[in-house]
Picture 1: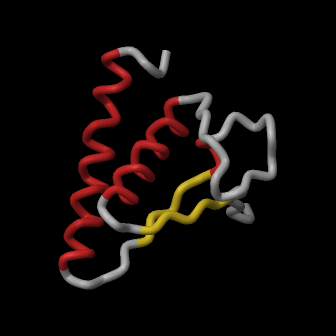
Picture 2 (picture 1 turned 60 degrees about the vertical axis):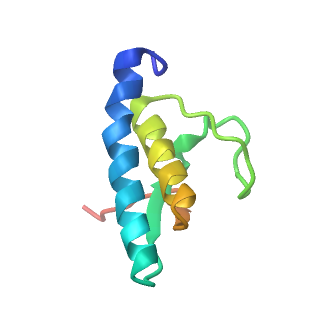
Picture 3 (picture 1 turned 90 degrees about the horizontal axis):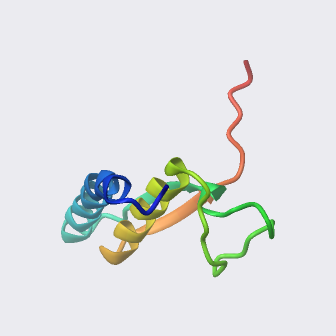
Length: 88
């Protein structure tokens, strides 16, 4: 599951690296933008507003949420994409 010690530990480097980069950008006076995804939600109440409570259903969504929180904690900004289309 997403809350096992192994799963939780796997997100620590993601969150820490995002936090470190956002802090360095803030210290340099450079805005930091983090691209996230709607996979932080469970899909039950789309479309989602900015204040919607996250509820990721998989490891990818959980890791993206960890990154979002770390960036915000460090003064960065987050934007989310709903669809990614490569055209092939």
